[in-house]
Length: 109
Image (cartoon, rainbow, N blue to C red; front, top):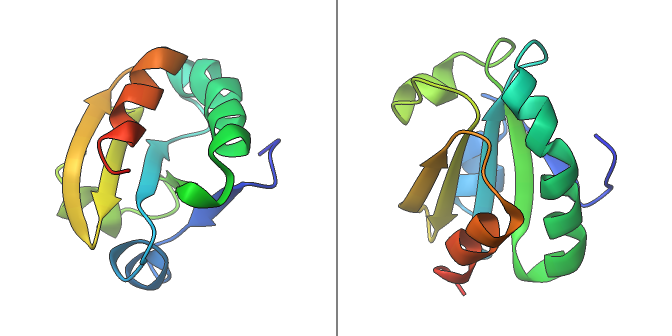
């Protein structure tokens, strides 16, 4: 992960970092072998840097953490899910543009 503002979420820290967060959280469900996931990674880094502390942004590797994607019905990757106050606000699937990401995040601000 290129940006220090992009966190790593796991099955073990997901509840603490995402569900119990007082800040909106954007979660990128991804895998190392996924070409569209790699394609949007720089965009995620940029958005994480731009939004700073307003939104927590992190990634869940679906191969290393199989429980969390299952709980949220992740069937394809990349899947981006926006959480606020522990609830799913919205989600996007696939390699999305920066403007689509910003539009998604702004729903929680």
